Length: 615
Image (cartoon, rainbow, N blue to C red; front, side, top):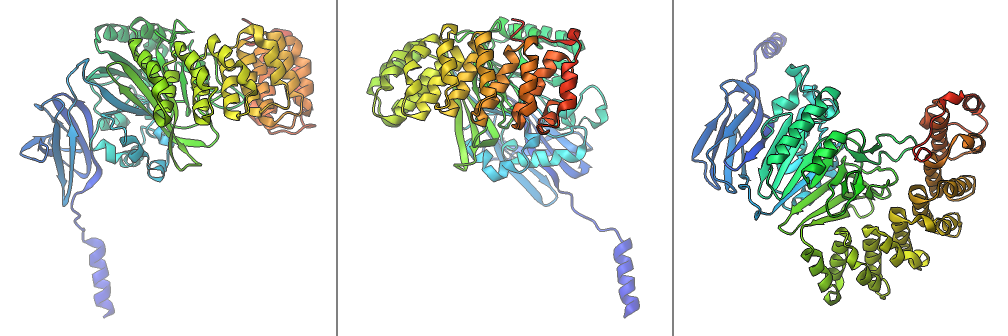
């Protein structure tokens, strides 16, 4: 008996076991055009890709790929535009069957909805945990753009299956176009392990992917083309020529790295981009009146006021947006229309673009930890003809309830200044929800007229109305009002959220001397941490060499880690001596003498002026 068992074990060990081939990566779509589509899937064995397809519900045609490959790419051609087709793929005993729709022909009349998101490599299991795809698909997007960084290391083969599994549900039925990010790796070196290239078929290839879908034209640039000095000018020249031939009502440029970005909510201005590093691209976008620019890389959400020639231009500017898939933005800058509110929100995030005949409606959603669902955190509307906002404004008085709130929100999202008087009347109503929405809309418009409409509401009984009034000052405070705002910012009886915005108003628009005195006083006070942290952040812009000693006294006794780190960052800029600000923030009072001495002894020729001091 023992010998028979031993013989059986030996046979099991030495005899090969045959397994039927199966899917390693399920079918997903690439390069959807009016007359074709690429179906990509991967099996556990080499072979020929085969796809059966036909008009929706039929599989009476067949397309094949190369004779012997593991990542199987099958191009189907000869299809009709804007038409639903069924397709199926068989591997071993498995069958995957789906329906997709071809792209529409270029047309100014064909409205289009699409979605963007980015930096999904950091999402772990959040797609499944939050019901991300269900929420996303409620908007019926026709295709998807990802602003890069699908995986941590693109040249690592093992990381790609989890990515495609995560988005298998939408990838099987819709085109997902990715602007290659730095984590995808280079397309120029180690081509043998360039798995992004092996797994994708971008429309018109890389590094300059582009396609037209109905009334929109999209360009996606690979990351190396936008940051490698040797490639920046050739890429800008290509973009200039290409956009000159683009005739769509809406044009979009997607790339991984932002042009404008507030950076991370940290003490050291990490990844802050004021628009200077990509001047050539910015000029091309302005020249060709590009509708919107989308980027990722920095794992935050922020949206900017329309910008042209490095200035806010509501009617003619490019609509810049950073969606890095998460929530963690820094304090607003002059270009900021909205930065994410880290309190209560988290990844994942997504943005919906609805390109209609008379307007482009942009809505962004984030996961709410409190509500356990996706909620809208921002809205922006670009309109073509003033008849659009005028019609909304004309209807405002006749609307009630949810319709009224949506109209108020739309006017704010349109940045429609003529609506301010009507919105100001709503502020006086007894309907709190309408008052809050009107305050938001006026604040979002963000002009001097907004200030005049909201000035008296800095003392409103409702905290949300007070907050929106303060936010309006952060966007567009006249310098002449600085003394009153400084007094309010220093007032301990004020709501901390309001004070944070008023400090921002001083930093961005106030007299530097008044701002410096006010913010230094707040840092040295017993104000709430959120208020003192905002003041410490703002000081970097307004202090100079003569402020080194006061800053050293303040940092020597500071216990708040963020304030300590931000003061260290500011001292680094002033003296030229560099100390890791975030690490320094972890030290305690009484432990800093060595570093304080180095800041004190920094050579005079090492002094660096801050941005505000040099203006």
